[in-house]
Image (cartoon, rainbow, N blue to C red):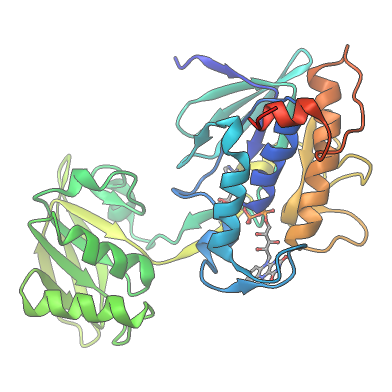
Length: 342
Ligand SMILES: Cc1cc2nc3c(=O)[nH]c(=O)nc-3n(C[C@H](O)[C@H](O)[C@H](O)COP(=O)(O)OP(=O)(O)OC[C@H]3O[C@@H](n4cnc5c(N)ncnc54)[C@H](O)[C@@H]3O)c2cc1C
């Protein structure tokens, strides 16, 4: 069994609000750990609009989704906060005055406070409703690539026509034996440059392209051996392969959060506006997932919510210490925690 990770606060969600919560906790001297279901940090900003400019972050006239995430990561660098990606919190259990949270990979955290900064819920891959595809999940069929090295010298079938499918086709073509790219439509939704790179790989016979085709079956015994695809005009082909990668986009699900006994209304968690605590002691909700009268689903609102929740998390982590109001401009403890020279 995995050892419990003890921390002052567990942050669920590595979106902008979860990241800023790490900062607010850090300058109060609290340690945190972050868990996110995705394989990358940054929530909606990184996943949905990395290149779009945002104009309403205070003090930043314009920054892209990705540059905001990069700056938030820079801001929390001094705290060296562990980020546990590719896993979501499945269950919560009260253990005396603390919470025990278990992830889908079996990692267990023990903490007095949990910040749910889950945005619009965990982004889940869209899966084709095919029994055999589900059967081969993690035995050849995947929806993300935590480690590209496992695809070295392999024959891979990639499904999809967006940025992820094309980026990975180009990237994996450098190490894979061969790639079949299968797309349901004729046109691609990826950036033009990547589409051109992919077309060049097709010319070089490193990639075989099937448009107007979709997956209909997966075949094999213990391990995947091949997938069957069907074209719009009904032609079926079997592609022998070692691995299948499906990039059909993401959908949002609250998932297990629904089962934790929290007050939930219209897929958002009800909180008080004094400290953004939910109906459960020590469980807070901040950012897009929080609901209260007048809530605006904006990044700046989430930043404010994170600051107030962190104050309450301090009281729970250090009940015997006084929490003083301090400015970052002049407070020596904050400077020390940020690693600034005296
Ligand atoms: C196209 C677009 C443009 C936008 N433009 C602006 C703008 O100009 N200004 C502005 O202020 N806002 C804008 N927004 C909204 C802004 O992106 C959100 O308000 C912000 O991302 C909310 O941050 P968050 O950290 O609360 O949640 P998110 O960014 O949604 O991040 C939540 C993270 O939590 C993870 N997660 C969820 N549940 C779990 C779980 N159970 N276990 C593990 N991980 C979990 C998710 O995978 C995700 O990474 C825009 C949104 C979109 C889609």
